[in-house]
Amino acid sequence: MSKSLHSIIAEFTDQDQRYIERNAKRMAKDMISHADTLAAVRTALAMTQEEVARVLNVKQNAVAQMEKRSDLLISTLRKYVEAMGGQLALAIKTGQGDVILLDGLSSAAASKAKPRPPARAAASQPARGGQASTKAKVKAKPARSASARS
Image (cartoon, rainbow, N blue to C red):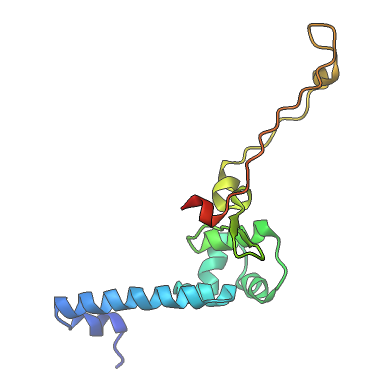
């Protein structure tokens, strides 16, 4: 009869169990920080392809194919990362070593994005003063480097 890892750990003292948990968390963080593929990240997070597939509402083989691809849509990558309980953050590293976070493509930005209403025909018609309005409201968010954030 085989024993589960949890039943073996349950036989240790409370102090030993805390030590095991602390080291397991540290080792998991190390695995995640060295992961260079989607499959490696998923494995480091102790998730199976079936679990990710269930959250994404796809079949397991779709997750396997996704993990093998080297070219994914950002929205697909975002959904995959969120299915594992994470948030996608994209960054550019310049030749000078600066890191610029692309906040507009992150998971947080995607969840805040709301569909825009269709453009109104009235916008191109003359304004009250008799002249067509040519002002456009543009809010440009300046790129921020990691060094500028500190």
